[in-house]
Image (tube, rainbow, N blue to C red; front, side):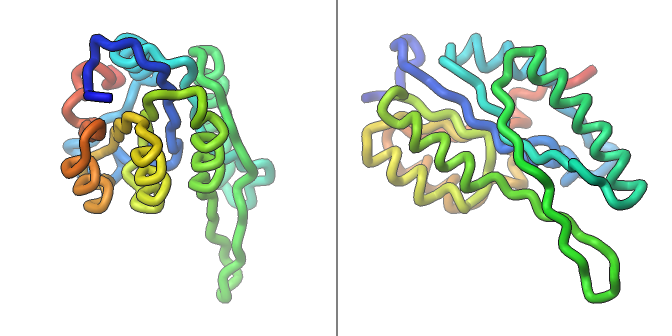
Length: 189
């Protein structure tokens, strides 16, 4: 199946919320920008006509410190908005890990859930759009490519792992798009 945007493919979008939400924080404050999720949805609908857009995120059900409470309140607002915009929201609880000094750190990876979501939809999709640059997805991308699926990876340039970049450059029916290249279409103003 050649990369042809005119061909109607059954597409599904899988968004690694942590990778996307915090990706803009990897740049200096002067260059920082945020994604407008309404514009992102419009872009995805126009460009790929997906059957669904799944957003995978973490919910902090019991914030333990003021900084976590602020973040949890913000994410609750974002998740409500995403649902209103037509995103399918898949969440799991944030995990707290106590450090030796008594402070807490958090963990909330969704790699396994996203992988399972893609695998569960493998037979109904021709094209997988993964919005994440995490190298952990390489075995999944390789498997989907071997199943003749078209692979599109969209990620912040700094967060796009070299393994994914190299794989998409060296394989037919694969490509990556730097989020920065579509900034004008999806930026929150």
